[in-house]
Image (tube, rainbow, N blue to C red; front, side):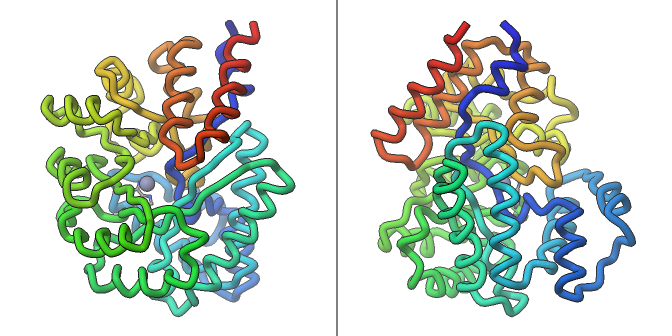
Length: 336
Ligand code: ADE
Ligand code: ZN
């Protein structure tokens, strides 16, 4: 079977995507011009050349710098629409999108401006492109819990548009335990929870995400393989892990794709999924991530089917939508 063709036609579900991480340099420059924002790089090419990261923080420094060009409802709408158009062309049928409100509200942009622009595009994306979606509010873990509580209060009028809260930004030194109370408050509001854990941080952070934040998914989680008891727990609970292969290699979590633990994770029975994280910064969207792991591990139809079905199962879709996407994935895999 032609694996490239299979990847191309596979219906895809994305579960780990930061909308601010879809800001391509060309669009960043266009927004900067429209909004009169001065940039520290002279050209699109110079900016792209700076995307040479050695760890998570070296990426986050540029990522937060980039958010400065996002100012109006139209900016957030166009950013989100561009992402949806790109991934619709790659066969994405459902996406669960993170946004980082604090990276905008701390610059004086209203919470409503951010969420109105994003959700206007998500509604249009479902109607015009057939891409369904859910929205996840992430708290920035390098800031304190009071700031996260203030963000949760700002979100209160919009809770019908938000499915879950998440936790992102600089991981080491900012364990999930720092946010136990605000995650509890979010759950009392009826929100689900997820958290980045075990990307650069140790397995203990994954235990905390499970036990203290009561997460439905672990974002990244690749360092779980260092702790056999943790792997057993994750397998037992069928806990989904939203793995982001190109992100992990670009941020030097692994030296190259063949050194990635994805295959080891699947062989251990973990519910790993494939996602793009910040595709404008890491060299690819869903198709490029699937292609990278297929080539590194010589995955066949069985592995691609398993990864795809893991994503459907791990999504926050209802049973009917999950069944429809599952059928379409099985049809795509078994076509020839
Ligand atoms: N924010 C955007 N991308 C992130 C990542 N990969 N890890 C932590 N925080 C992030
Ligand atoms: Zn992420």
